[in-house]
Image (cartoon, helix red, strand yellow):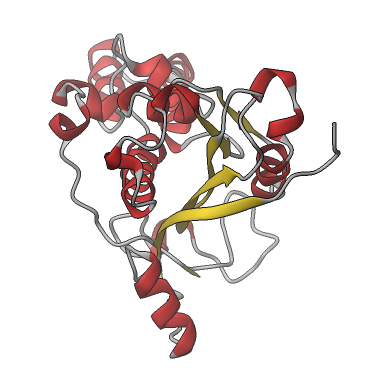
Length: 253
């Protein structure tokens, strides 16, 4: 069996700061548009975390970056119960949007030429999700409670303050655990878009996208992915998400 096989990029989609599609992203490149902006208040307040002195603990000396614009999301379009959305990390939801678009961009997907049962999802997803931090922070209530008691506050006041802090965080629910896992991103796409090939993520920190692409490009020669002729490749980041549909040009086995 040969050690390599040609592949073709048959579809693309992207979500970048300042543009929600590949055309907009390319337009920004051609026009040299700078999409780095100040941190929007919807993300975090500069006065809460910014300090120009990099040695100050628990603060950041950066206050600019690339941030996605708000993107409408209809959970019913993907068969998701609306009540589970607050307990689902945004990267899972954005990935669904990007995946649906890349399949549509592939053109032939809705013509029945691509077999759903042989389409795999291989994604580069690095680090913990934002929801993990939020839900984990909510569980720190024993520390808050102890600190307030040590400060001499009355028990009724302690409980009131603890509850007020907890109210700033998303409460746990039955769907929280799958909603916070980064490795569920691929499974969510496969499940909601009815893709029956392999689905998994690779985590190599900043090289996650490269490791996912390497896995996709060699997938036609791995027994576990031998039957998957079309694969999705995705890279995610704080201010970007891009996804491609790759199809093996090797003869089906």
